[in-house]
Length: 122
Length: 122
DNA sequence: AAGTTATTTAGTTAAATGCCTAAATATGCA
DNA sequence: TGCATATTTAGGCATTTAACTAAATAACTT
Image (tube, each protein chain N blue to C red):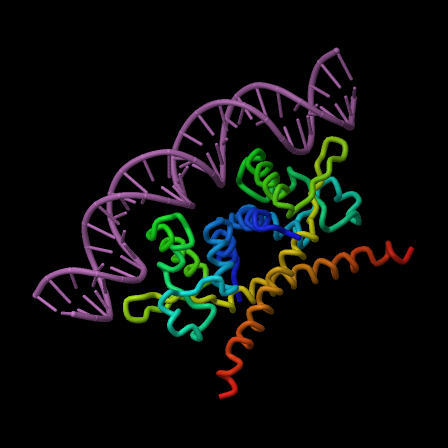
């Protein structure tokens, strides 16, 4: 279960255009790692730092820092293989966060019904 | 439909502890407006700026600024009645955002299945 | 071992954020 | 009209964020 500080960290991470775009592309398979071009059937959801950086005008260290932040927020996973780092979506976190929103909306509707029960009956 | 900039604005708004707490309390009925104490059956989801400010150690202008940001992000609604401003949750925005997460997770699972279809068949 | 590739760390800088106090505005009430 | 209440605006200041370049680290390749 995500606690408040974890949720805030996720929102902070996604509240920046560059990181939001990385998030979007990592989760929808928008990046293809040049290394994986030879063997494209690895995963549509796997890429490496420099491949992501190629999609931006920012320097590599800047993108690297953004990726660290996304990882610390639990949005992506990073796995070192030889001298490259593979980035993958962490679907669990997003599923959980989505569940929080769904639950919030459900509870809200229920509360509203309960609260205005007698008003409706009038 | 929320566009990218609108989503980023929402995440920016919720990526701050004070605003997150306001959001949480506004949506779960955590605030009771002192004015509404006499007539408590107004709504559990309605309050005013100074009531919210009482829950924090920050100054009124600071809370006012946070509320403006939450409103600009479409998270809350503010309605002036006489000389007070009533704050209410904007459930539509949260429902939409929740829907985006749900859809993202669904698409992700579908993609994964599609992509690894032949791998699974082996 | 030396060079190449991939990534991170360190240090600097400009802009944005989040807070404050004081003053302004807007409405209500006597 | 004049005082009280509710909220916002303005201006200032400290901290954080997001970018950069240069240098360091780590692992592969010849």
